[in-house]
Length: 192
Image 1 (cartoon, one colour):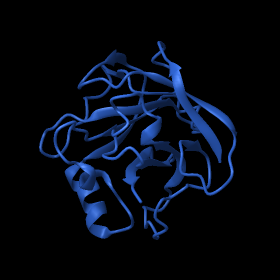
Image 2 (tube, one colour; image 1 turned 180 degrees about the vertical axis):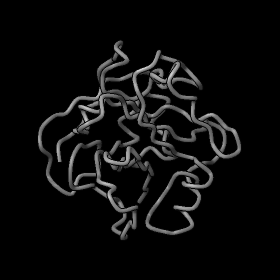
Image 3 (cartoon, helix red, strand yellow; image 1 turned 30 degrees about the vertical axis):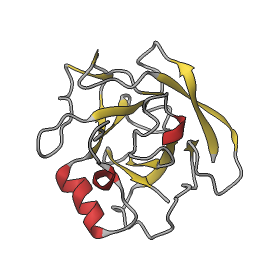
């Protein structure tokens, strides 16, 4: 695994990044939960950055977030079937594969920070990281759909001030799994 660094301001929406606007304008609707609540853009990555072949677009990650209301149980997954049910049926996190559209803003915007890959890190690693193996905080068998492969993880404490609780707690880690062939993804959070 290599460390991901999220500390440089980003003014180019085509770069791998956390926060900012989503490149969905004219190509996809802003994602909402099953109850109609607009999700927050967590991160957006060019397919090339993620090593996806035969796809020349972007992968954007969205999640429920609230500064006032408790939401951690809506986005966590530690291998429990009920947690997976919440993620899938309530649509509290979503991963969109999409072409490049115009930059749009659907909710309160997280300050945009470029995502850069740094050096290899000692394992297990529970910070922001790229590539196998996932630094899971809980070692349960996940039971994800066949074809889902770990892509990267984002540590809540690495987000800009005011958003370090983006995943419910400052020490929570969000995990991105992708199936490039089916153009599907899964994003969930773990806490210790």
